[in-house]
Image 1 (cartoon, helix red, strand yellow):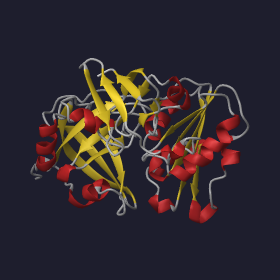
Image 2 (cartoon, rainbow, N blue to C red):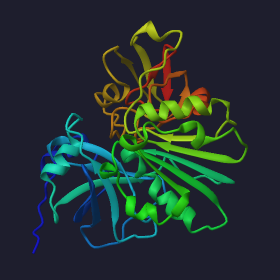
Image 3 (cartoon, rainbow, N blue to C red):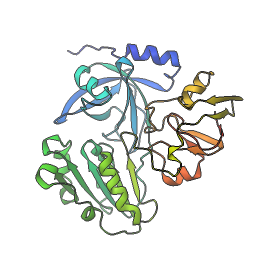
Amino acid sequence: MTTSRDVDAPAVATLREAGTLAGTLRVRVEKLRAEADGVLSLSLVAADGCPLPRWEPGAHIDLLLAEGLERQYSLCGFPQDTDRWQVAVLRTPDGRGGSEWIHTHLRQGDQLRVRGPRNRFPLLPARRYVFVAGGIGITPLMPMLRQLAARPETSWRLVYGGRRRASMAFLPELERFGDRVTVWPQDERGLLDLDTALGEPEVGVAIYCCGPEALIGAVERRCRSWPPGTLHVERFAARDAPDAPDAGRGNLAFEVVAARSGVAVQVAGDRTIVDTLAEHGIHIPVSCGEGVCGTCETAVLDGVPDHRDALLSDAEKEAGTTMMPCCSRARTPRLVLDV
């Protein structure tokens, strides 16, 4: 018999002081399962037994862990299952500590706080789909593949790369999709043949990519000649800042006006917008702090943001109507935000 441990007490105490527990719910770890070497899947059910919120392929949740850790993981189960959520966690000993804590400390029956789901990586309508996954980047794509597999008329294929077969999660299920899936272990076949996987530019194709930054960057370069809006990517970490013409300007101070609150503050070069506003009683929900998850997305009413996130598309950044104030700054002396 499994007993229940409330393992997130330190984190909850800290988050309650910051006023960020709003919108969270408590879940229980129903099951832990090794999906591959270093990959652990968690089956999560509502602690009160109620149905969980519905979600669509591409969505992720925030796990509020012990010791003040908060991490984002893609939902990789079945969207129609409102009884449980599934996430898969790659153990990265040299990471920021979240995955190591989950692999080392989390047990069946433990309870956690979660926030979400949110979706900045939705499966959009297309005539044909190409999926490119690297390692744990397979997780947000699994629900998409299942959904498309239920539509026999839709054309799609997946190229899935990893260091070794033993380290690649969900292979038994993927094998059931037949020749639509190409498994590409690096120790057997070398680097992914992206030119063959992507083919020639074509209208009506949607390309979805998730994995290490090197893979995403390589796919982005090859998709420059494709029609705009073809490529959709999800990153697990913030990418390096682009080499813009004024990239050497540093973190200059600027003014932020919180329009709804009527407060104007000066953001110093070594401070973020969210931290500065919080010091004046204006709290913007924040999760990753790196511009990856989208929790803090805020509308821009005036001024030009200096986008440093890994989430907004080039078109969204050019429009400048929204930004991630956890990491982004300003290109103009003054920004007016809808907070």
